[in-house]
Length: 444
Image (cartoon, rainbow, N blue to C red; front, side, top):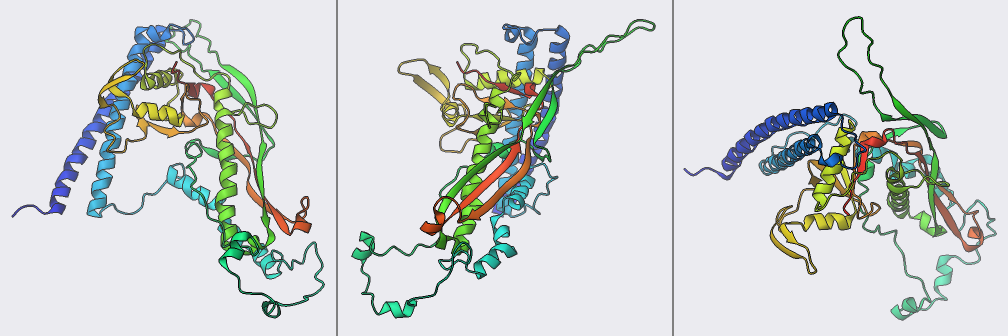
C-alpha cells in the first residue's frame, strides 16, 4: 500500500529535523571558529582604527569565520521554517510558544497593553462623557443649551426628498460612518531595540568606549599589568513627541471611529517619529540623538569591489572585534531592493550586464529577511549608502510617559466651529550605552 500524504510528511519532517541537528552542530563549530579568530586578532594587536586593518590576515580570518557562521545561521533558519511549515500541514504545531518577556511575542503583548485605545474607551470617563452628551452638538461643557426650536420629526415636513444630485453638490452632507484606517508599514526597529522605563527627565550615564584588554599571565613577585578603561560621560534627555488632529464634534460620538483613531493613526504617527529619531535624530534642540549621529559607532572603509553583502559583513566584523554581538541590519528599502537583485555575476555598465542566478533565490519565492544570519529590516530613514548593523542591546528606548490622548474643545476656535482637538503625545529618552555596538556599512 503506498504511503499516505501524512506519512510522507512525517518522513519529510524526520529528514528536516535530522538536518537541523546537523546544522546546530555546524553552528557550534562555527561559533568556536569565530571565537578563535577573534582571540587571534586581539593577540595580534592590530589597531582597529588603522585604515588598513581590513587587509590584515587576522581581520580577514575573523571576517571569513563570521561569513561561515552567517551561512550556517541562514541554513538553520530555512530548515526551522520548513519544520514549522510541515507541522502546520500536519496540524501538529502544538501549544502557542511561551515567551520570556524579551521576545517579539512579548513585545507585541506589551504593545497591546500599552497602546490599547479600546481599554481607554471602556473606562468610565468616556462612557460618562458620552452619556452626558459632551461629544454631541448639545454638549454640556463650554456651552449653554437654550432649548430646541424644532425637533427632528417636526423638521421633516419642511424638507423635500434628498436626491443624489443634492448630495453631490454639497447641499446635504453624506452620512459618514467612522474612520477607515489606511495601510501602515510595520515599525520593526521598535521591535528590535529593547524598551525600558525611566522616572527622570534626563538620563545621565557613562559610555564605555574601550574595555580593559591588558590582563596577562604574571609571575610571582612581579608587577601585575594595569588595566585601562576608556569612558565618556553622556546624557540622554527626555523629549516630548506629539501630534494632534481636529475632528467634527459629532465624530467623537462614534465609538468605533474614535477607537480607530486612538488605536491606530495617532499612536502610529508618534511611534513612527520615535523610530526615525532613534535612527537619525541629530540631538539638536528637542531632537533625540539617534544611532547614526552618535560619536564612536564603527565605520569601516569601503573596499572595492565590495557589494552590499560584503560591506555589511565588514561592519559585522568591526562590531565583533569590538566585543559586540550584532543581531540586526537596518537598510533603506532601495538598498534592500538592490540586494535582492544581485546575481552570481555582474559586469559594470552602463548598461549593467547581469547573468546567472539571483543570490537571494528565485523571484518566484519570497526571500527570507536575513543576511549573514542577522535580521534584516527595511527603513527609509536609513541612508541608501550606509546600512546600519548593530547589537540591539547597545541602546535602549526609555519611556517616561506612554502615549497619552487628550480631547478639548477649547483650542483656537474649536468652540465656535463645533469641533474638538485630539492630542497624542509620548515622552521618551534614547541612551546609546555602547556606541561600538553599532557600525555603518560603506557602499561607496
